[in-house]
Length: 141
Image (tube, rainbow, N blue to C red; front, side, top):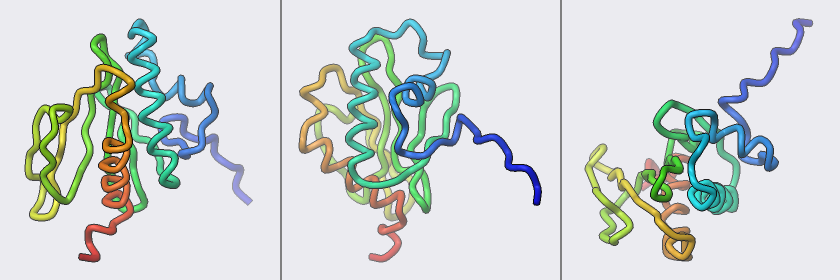
C-alpha cells in the first residue's frame, strides 16, 4: 500500500474550522481590514449552508468549486469584499458591478460588498443559484 500523500492546503473541503478559513485567505491578504475579512468569512458561511464544495486558491481570488465546476469566488480587499458568481440569468442589483455572458446558459456576475447588511437573504438566494450551477444542475434544464 502506497503511503498517503499530505492533503493539499490549497484545495480543502467545505467544512474548514476557523484556522483553515484564515489560511485560505492567505498571505496575499495580510493587512486587509478586519471588516473585509469578516465579510469574506460571512460569504463562506453562506456558501457552506448549501452543501459541500472545494476551494481553488489563486493570487487574485479564492474560487468555490462544486462537483461539476467553479461557481463563485471572493477576496477581501481594502474596501470590503469583491468577487463573482455564475448564474443562469441576468440579475440587476447595485451589488453587481458587471454582468457578462460566459456561455449560452451562464452569466458571470461580478460583485462588490461593502457592509454585512449586503450579505442578506436575497444575496444568499443568488449564491444558492450559483451553488446549483457548480453542482451541474444548469445542465439538466
